[in-house]
Image (cartoon, rainbow, N blue to C red; front, side, top):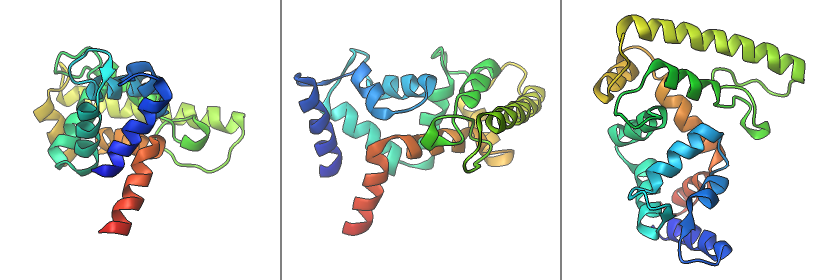
Length: 190
């Protein structure tokens, strides 16, 4: 995709190198700390701390145009903070509590989408969000005592709630600059 290549090379020009370092990529993603780190680790597929053109384009094509299962794998890996191919409930809780609801102002969680609010209202809303997350966690813990593997993650998304999947992708779509532009460009040229 020429658009993604131009985004990559534009970022490379800013680095004075022939690649994008993981720290620069994390800044570009403009995402909450934990999620941004997990996405960068997925983009940097070979783990060398240097994101090359192929890694960048392949990840974003998969994220933007991949199958539902490929996209769910990206979301699953965001939760799997220790990389053991199983997500523990503590990992889910950390990620969900760090997803901003009011993305343009960088605070909250994904469970609510309120417009403008004061800091006091935000703290009240965050408390409610955290209670909702805790409720979700207790339901998941009843059904999956030891955490979830990828096949169980898919089952939860299909049978119970898609919140775990949707939360990650809403955050990505709202935060990453090239994502919005990709869909604009795609609509113009389709």
